[in-house]
Length: 318
Image (cartoon, rainbow, N blue to C red):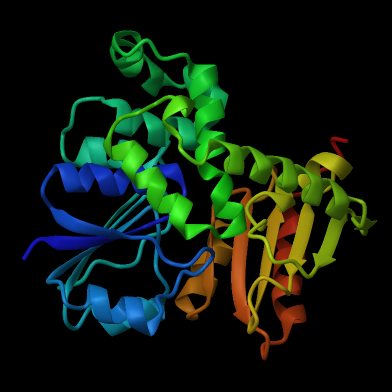
């Protein structure tokens, strides 16, 4: 039986799934509910019917892996420093890289193409042209008459439903990616996406008015229904010049979302330790995101983040 993929919600994750579909490795791509790095019982039932499960741009929780690995062979591709340990049933290929699509290109020895480019621009934005990987994509860009600034704007439109948990539009993204249609003229839901972007900017602007600065870090606690935990920590830092701590107690009924952004810190050991303890945690050197049960003592996790901030923060840049 051909495998199935569980892909992250953004264009890098969805383009990665489309690449595996082109290779004939999967027959289906599942997009889990926004923000959830554990799989619901319904999704678990679906994916466990397959002998091979691919997680793309998405490192599932330890609980999910433990539940699936006894029955299926699991493959994990993610452009992250953290990777679950390889075992008889789990094969991980993770390293810090520009995008997961780029990892797949290397792993499967693929030629540069539009789908790989979409993943790169999704994660690198307009800065892509400054990276060494840009050079090998020049023929793809020229052959398809691609304007990078326009491609950045297109991806912004495609990713807009992510913040509003509009899964149907994310599946529409899959169709757009599969057809290599890199123009906003092919987006049927264009007007809705434009409204999403306007609403998103208004919500973030409003939330930033409640930011507090204390003891050399900035702090925002709110109760929201949009998936902002990827965007807000950076926005808070840019507003204050201080490393940020953001807590959302409203997106999940039973969980807190906590995130921090600090460009001079290194959260990698913290992320590894939390995941080893069974918590949902991810991010990068400068960003950490954690999802914890509301029965947990949130101050314990905040203290861990504050400790990392105290080691890494060297002064305000604002």
